[in-house]
Length: 99
Image (cartoon, rainbow, N blue to C red):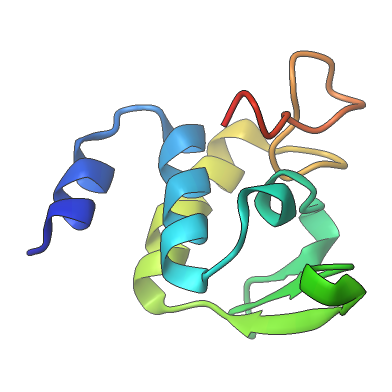
């Protein structure tokens, strides 16, 4: 197991684990991860839609089974409404600086 996976598995906070794993496994930039909405993830198809990513392009990213294993517990426990990773105020997403 590589060092990144050891760090990810050691994280107790489900939100932090999901953020870091999506960034690491899907090649997402921090700015893309913080702007994800709950409607952007398709659990059945294991896909993630990224809007206005690099070059202002939308793209679809496939999620591995491991990525789903990291993200699903967070979604089930926290039940985010609009933003996948809300900030202190639920109507706003977490900031890049916070991540």
